[in-house]
Length: 373
Ligand code: V47
Image (cartoon, rainbow, N blue to C red; front, side):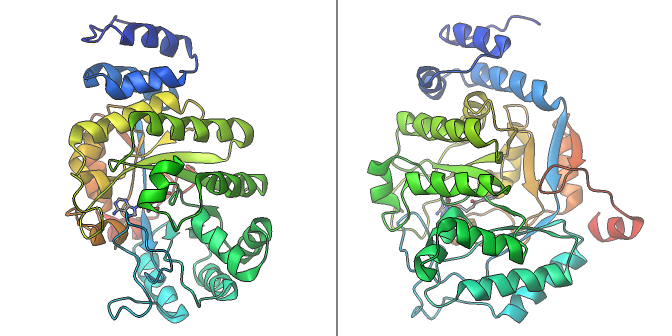
């Protein structure tokens, strides 16, 4: 292996650890966040990414379903949630959810990604019925549903424990959970950007219970608002510690804060430099989480493409009808066709691998290809 020519000599001892497969301590995480030598950080992250996944970049064909944007929490970071009395809010009926999903089924999706606001009237039984209806109609589609924040709210409303809520949803058809709602675990920051949300400890505790019940989940970090580099590293290390215990996280997704239409609108948008850096640092710090996703909706397809050479091995999916980021001013398209994902991957010199939610290969029939290309 050629020795790289780092601009920042502080990366040399980190290279030695990366080459030896050693865990990086928090101080290295802070250095990786603060150095201007992004190419150096990317070089290190790419070593790990290629060691784990070679030239493969994963993607899937999925559809997002957001049954309601009514939310009792008014998080300052969010442009999606609305109060029930807001005439622009919406709540789908069960029939509507199943109908939307049917459009996804025609698009040959392998996953429905289902999250929504904390609705004060929809019951846990309603959500279970929604899942059962989806499974009955589309038995082959994986249901990745509900963040830890939603689980906590269902528990609060029903007076059941987190475990009981998760068991009910699992029995109704929930196959895994997305990684949202983690934001940043620092309580100081959380009090400002999402003070109505569960704290970081509860988010991690619910993830732990999910994993104990055999559910796989994703995890995220929201960056680019008022957090410091130390807060970011603290967040990554907390995820890494839980993963050591449970092994239940499949994919980490760093999420850039989009300020438009939120009450934090005065905050500058993240830069491409910071977006790429978050991919690279998370790949290096999260040595026990298999996949790092460059979510193209959030970082643009162009940056997601470059991220494949800076530590990311996944660029998410076709998505179809993304709402959370578009309400917060995202100017990216609301979906990408499978062919476009393939082009983003092959032009970066990577090999596309269509996966299901749990990273098993997806076999396509001729008929499915004619819809998808
Ligand atoms: O939990 C909300 C974030 C998350 C804003 O698991 C915002 O595969 C930026 O979790 N600006 C939802 N971010 C998205 C999410 C996700 C996305 C793609 C894949 C997966 C997965 C998970 O978006 C929320 C919150 O952290 N968010 N508002 C905003 N204004």
